Image 1 (cartoon, rainbow, N blue to C red):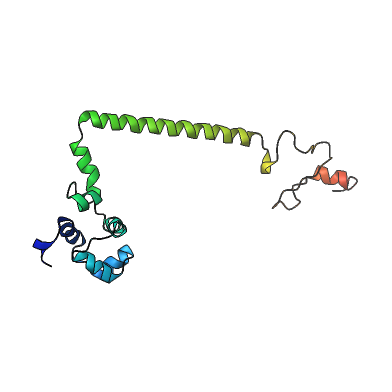
Image 2 (image 1 turned 135 degrees about the vertical axis):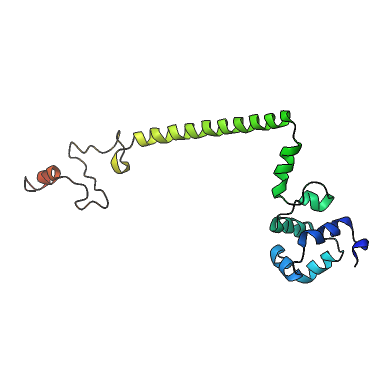
Length: 164
């Protein structure tokens, strides 16, 4: 089919894929190569195929479908910044700063909660208050990875009748 008989979408589709083979396009879009061939020769492509093609080739979907905007997705931000008025840029900057401030506030709250939680724990995560009464010798805790289980010489002396 000649370019003169193709829809504008198909002309842009051909331009976007360049010299990629049907097989390669099929691999990139999870589409059978014969289906790709039909799409490239004028059959209406599925939205799934177009979406996957745009992602795989970094093609701006708006450009592919309507011919408007930059062809490459990387160029969208540049075009947007160039076409924005100073007022729009300031508004976007203000919104970004507000969002950042809100996220920092959330992180500070979470950090405070974490610090409070960690402040109530002693070594190895043993609660400081309401936990076992080690000084009175009523409970013996052992710590994994410590040769004597974390039991000190004073504790061993008490258990062994003064022999360490």
